[in-house]
Length: 195
Image 1 (cartoon, rainbow, N blue to C red):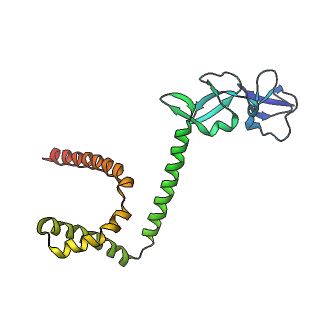
Image 2 (cartoon, rainbow, N blue to C red):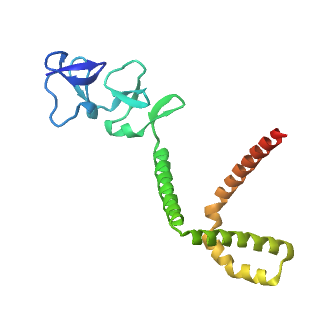
Image 3 (cartoon, rainbow, N blue to C red):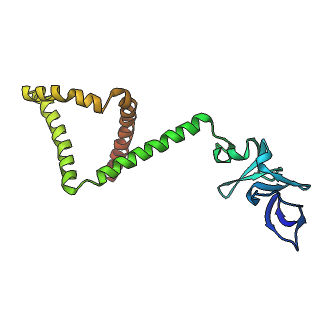
C-alpha cells in the first residue's frame, strides 16, 4: 500500500505515487494513523503524543514536527486538549468538571428563558408590573413603614427565603454588585465625556 505523506500524516492512499507504508490495520481510519518513517503507528497505542495547534485545531503526531510539544496523553484524551497561556496541555479534572457544571447551568437558563419566552404578551406585562409593584412597595415600606406592608412582608418572607436562599445567592449578588458598579462607572464616564 502506498500513500501520500505530509510530515507523519497520511494524507491520501495512492497506489501510483507516494511512499510504501504496508498494510493498514483493519477497522482503523486514517485520522488515527501516522507514518513514523518506518511503520504505521496507531495513535490509540501511544501514551505520549506530539501535539501542535494549527489553524485553531490540535494536530496529533507520532513524531516531533515543527511547533509541536510532547504531551502525556492517550488518543481518547484529545478532546481534553487546551491552549493555556501559550502552552498546550490537557484540561485538569477540575476544569472538566467546571465545564460540565457551566454547560448544565446554560441548559437550565435556556429552559428558563424558553418558559419566559413562551409567556403571552399579557403575562409578560403582568410579570413586569408585579416586579415593579414589588419594588414600589419596598420603597413605601422603607420610607413610611405602614403596618399593612409590614404584615404583608411577614407573610411572604418565608417564600422569599425559599426562592432566594442566601447560600445560593450571596456570592452571585456580591459579584453582581461589583459588575454593576463597573458597568455604571463606565456609563458615567461616557456621559461625562460628552460634556
